[in-house]
Length: 514
Image (cartoon, rainbow, N blue to C red; front, side, top):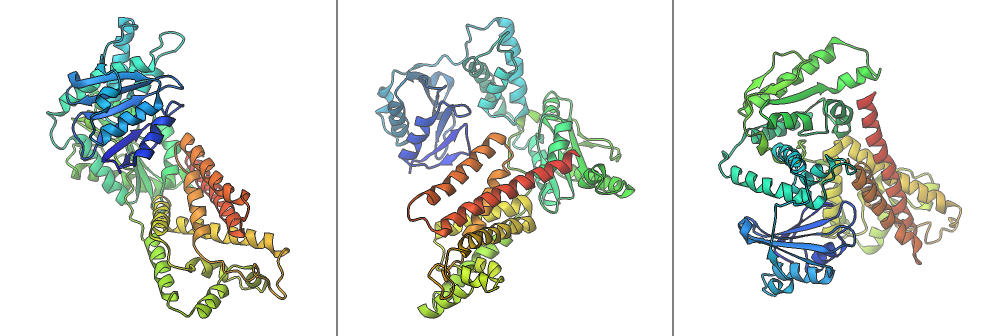
C-alpha cells in the first residue's frame, strides 16, 4: 500500500492504492472523461503533489509541485511505463523520479495563442466557476472550454487550464483570510438538518428551476414529504453578491399536477409548512433569512457573505440504514448457530429451506422467503462487508421498504426463473442431486440490489458503464465450462435488478415532470 490519495476524472478518490493499482490508472488515461491522475501524500501536505494529463494517445504531461508556484515543474513523455515508475517512486519517498524526466520550471499561466479579448472573456467565465465553490479545478477548466464556440474563438483544454490555474492560485491566497465558518458552511449545515427532517435536500442542483423541479423527485428517498434546493444560477448569483435563493416544495404538488390527487388547500398548506421549516433551519444555522411566509415565493439568504466558499459536500439525506445491518447480522448469527449442528442434521435443514426443484414442485413456496435467511456457512468478512454496503446504500437512497422490495424481488424472481429452467430437465422421482441441491443464501438478492443501484446512478455515462460492467461480470461465469445453475441465477438477479432500477428512476422522473 502506498501512503497517497489518488484523484481521477472518472470516479471517487482512492486512498492507499497498491503500486500496481496506481500504475494501472496511469496507463489507462487518455480517453473521453478520463484524462488525468492527481496524487497527494497521506497525510496531506499543502501544495505538494504530482499529476499528469493525457489526451487520446498523445504524450503525457507530467507535473510535480513542492509548495509555492515557483516550485512547480513540468515534463513530457510518451512512455507510460516511465510515468508509472515516476509516480510510484514519488509515492514511496524515493529520489530517482527527480532525474527520470527532463523537469523544467512550469510556465503555468501564459496563453500566447489567445487574443487578449478572448483571454479576458475566458477569465471571467473561470471566475464564475471558481466563485461558485462547487466545481473542481478540472470542471472549471472544462466549463471555460465549453463556453466558447470551437468554430469561432476556440479555447483549448491546455489554454483553459492555464487560465484557471492563475485564478485558482488567487483564490487559495484569499481563502487564507476567510473566517473558519462561512455562510456556505452554514447553508450546508442547514441542508444536513433538513435532510434529516424528511426533505430531499440538494445544493447547487441542476442548471435552473425548470430542470431542478423536473429532476428533484428522482432523488427522493422513501418517506420524503418535500424538497429544498438551489440551482447553478442561484449559486452564481450568490457568488456575485446578490443573495442566495432557496427553493422548496411538497411532493403533493407533483401528485396534483399529474392528476394522481385532486387540487387541495392541504398541499398549499404543506408547502407553506415546508417553507417555514426551511427558513427556520437556515436561521438556526446563523443565516439572515428574508421570506414573507408566502409559499409561492422563494426564501432568500441575504446578505450573503462567503458564497465563493461553497464546497461540494455529501448528498444531504442522512438516514442511517437499520434494516441492512439487522439482516446481515441475523444471517451471520444464524450461520454460526447452524454450524454447531451435526453435519447430517444441518444438511437436512438447509435442504428443507432450499428453493430447489423438489421443494418448489412439491408446493413448498415458503422456501422462496426462508432460503434468503440461511447460508451454508458463515459469510467471509469481505463478502459480508460488501453485502452490508450494497444493502445499506440501497436503504439510504430508497428507504427500507423499497430496498427490501428490490432484494426480495431479485431473490424470488431469480429463484423462480432457475426453477422454470430446471423443472423439465431434472428428475424428482427418485430425485437426482440437482433436484435436491442446497440452494440458500443472499446472493440473488445481493446481485439484484447491485443491478438496481447501477441502473439508478444519476449520471448517464456512469450509469451506463456501471450497468454494462455489472452485466459483463454476471455473463462471464455463465459462458465458462463447469457453470452451475447458481451462475445463471446470479445473472438473472442482476438483470432483474437493472430492470427494477430503471423502473425506480423512470417512475420518479414521471412523478416530477407530469
